[in-house]
Length: 264
Image (cartoon, rainbow, N blue to C red; front, side):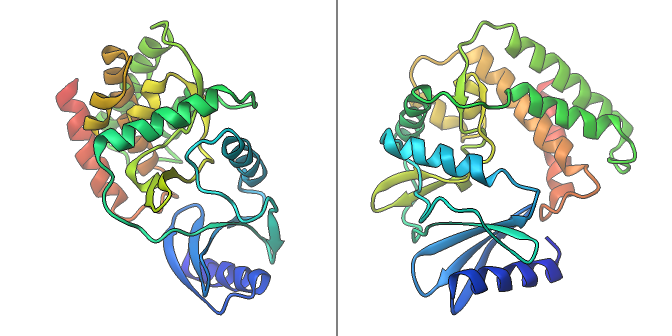
């Protein structure tokens, strides 16, 4: 969000919650605020540009199954001044999570997700979104043509390889990277369920540090390698979106394309 939108979103959140102060924790298509006093975290998006009801329902069902996810403080999508707001329990970050503990938490989440039947996009839908960015030069005007071609080829080839691998598919977190796993006094807990989708567990593992897979049993190494390159191509494509607001996004895109080129 732009600075003026952050200020408006923060004011709307404070008005709803009666918070005295707030700390901005992250800013992308949504902002995340820690509200003070109290242990409450607010996720705020423009009204109409979120999937908050589905995310809250998924969190509720996962908590019922004992899955390691952060709990919302309520199941309401609060609306004010053009913004939608959800409220979650805030945890003070603790120590770094060891790889074996990280993998165990992700495995527990996957077990819980196998027990839930909810409509979910397929992971290939996200691939197609990345392809659409690269295929439209109005949307991605600054993408170097050689990089554009390499990314499109990688998305097509790796997506096809994964889809025809025969790997079992299930409900996934979608982006269980370290920024979405909190070390808490209650153990590791996942946050940010808005990217949930269906696909092989290797797609989730591709978002985690490489060493996590060493502690996750029963994975297909070839599918994991394909998922890692696919994921890298997707996040690189998003950085070339003219509306991308990730800090240092273009610099990261250059680093990631070098990795993809080396692997190719």
